[in-house]
Image (cartoon, rainbow, N blue to C red):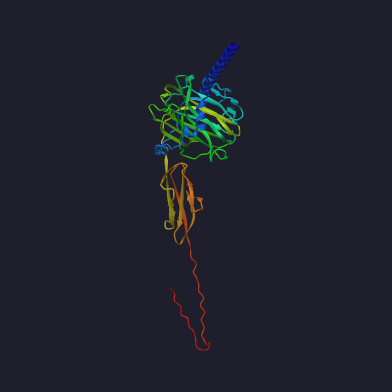
Length: 420
């Protein structure tokens, strides 16, 4: 009997061990499907997983003369007007637990009457709802140079606490075993740090797989731009595949303001963890952990993928300054230069010479400022501004002179005048 009991206990223990192994394998596959294990690395082990060194960004001087986000042929579009997720690839959703809504919604829209609504509860936990595009439906996502665009509406400011992150935009590479691994991600972060209540802004990371595990590298921002809360705003990114080694590039704009440009990075590795990559995936997300408020909502509309269009020269215009009269004073262009793009801000100053007073700045005879120092917004044409002065007239001065004799009977005083 004792022998049978011991044998039964041994079988029971073996069963528990086998169940544990099966559960671990299931959890690992689930995490691979959702991308959970990858994303958690950026916050759970920041010292090991995030390289905050500043990567040298190559000169962006050429960006002043070319439009790098001009759209060409459209490859794909998702506008939510179908009332479902049929515009996204195959099985488009990757949802974890705590998802409250993921689909087409009539709550609000940028165009038409619907948008995609992603809502999840991230209070004290992780939640993820993501919409993906990949090559399953013949969408050529593997084009080595494409522009990805989506409009976002975030109803309220996002803060975070503890181990947390908040991901709304990313790329992944599918590998030959059917799983996928991130190559670049866009987080919403908080100015002043988590818990500060500061404004939200976008932060781009690229992922290094060269060591066999993911290492997320923060890309320095070129412009400090906050996310508008309660308004639609556009995220647009041009994504060049790396064809060999580290020759990939990512440029990103928020409402057409360039905020990131990172070159010489592996945006599409040939292999990840020793397995060949097969295609690129792109997603828009409501994906995070430990957010404030706990329930987060994101609306997305007019998502698209385009080939780049022909780069166009951005015209510049000449600003000329004149004095009226020419002897009235001196003029300074505090910004420097003489040619500018439409919308550029140019700071000017007029200083009157002795005998003159400043009147105003005028353009084509119309007064545009009465301040001697002001900022002019450059129009889409050549322009001449005139600083107008007036001569200051000096009134003649009179001097009183009193004369008298002392004693009064001592003699006479005679005044003789002469003009100069």
